[in-house]
Length: 470
Image (cartoon, rainbow, N blue to C red):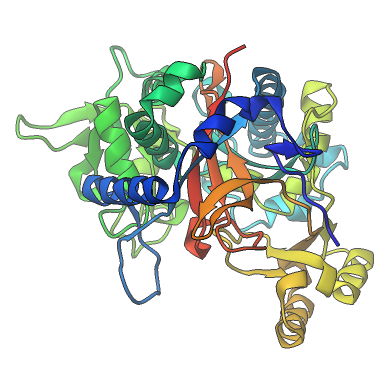
């Protein structure tokens, strides 16, 4: 039987980080807990914190379940994580500048050329171009799992448009509103300065042709997008305009925003739309979401796009396996955070092992996200395993496999009281003139007993994440 590291209890005792929560937990009767949970749900609904899931019936604006039991890290635990996340963000950006330039890591034989240059996320349109400050990925969401007191693994990197930061901020707001005493009794590092840090990061990578305070906008696909709430939420907190493609236009060497006072020049675009839809003259000609001519202005230094087109090649799940090599190659350092051991189905020996051991492994599509396109072997039926085996054999290079990790658990409020549930963590690393994080991140929790899939699109919930001040 698999044993899981319980982040609150060890050897029958409460671990030090959670000492401040023991009394709070014991003193909360079931009726008060249920009342508080209902209060949180009502607040989330009133504020509008919803998550649309495409292709599903029922409520298109369903609530992401919020669990009131916070996850806690010591200052020392966070210091190590922060150092490892920053190291990884530096290496990933160095890799992107390199593969859109001379490709030294490919020439050195450390990563196959096919994996980079034939990757569907590799954008020829930016080959030979280096964005301002040499930054391709300005917001890096690093998904981290824990398996023991000191054992942390990076599950994947999100270098394009990682979502969820609004839930990190709103979860903290919710906890402070409902349990103010907890924050008076515990010294918890703040996260509410994230929007300020994000705006500073975006402004710091303004293009060379920007001669005054940069005008920053958030480009959204519109209110039908599953993360639209987050787009409007961040625009409001940063004090910038939320725009759709039709609100912007290109004139000469610059991009302009339509306003009631006339056109206003835009310097930095925080885009929340996929590469393919950014510019119909460069990518998909049928895109109604982008801005015709935007890429010409971008390449000529008239506007910055964050994160840069082409950044997605760094968060491909097959490329992920080479990140430790990137750290050594570009930084001359040993990786602080470990990768999960991974088999690449594109390699014959790995393919043989994976197809013979599907019942014990987690298999993922290299471009999959949101918990879709994956097989969790120990939780799957024989028929599901056989069906997935056929998919792998039909296109081996589209899959990687990993062992089923013993994800740590944290106490979670469930119908019957408090029970351990599996969690992961997504900190948000901001990369501009400097690299910085707020202490904490988004903790996602698998609310179903025994489930290892924490994604919101698969029924997972969110928790507030505390980092205790030293």
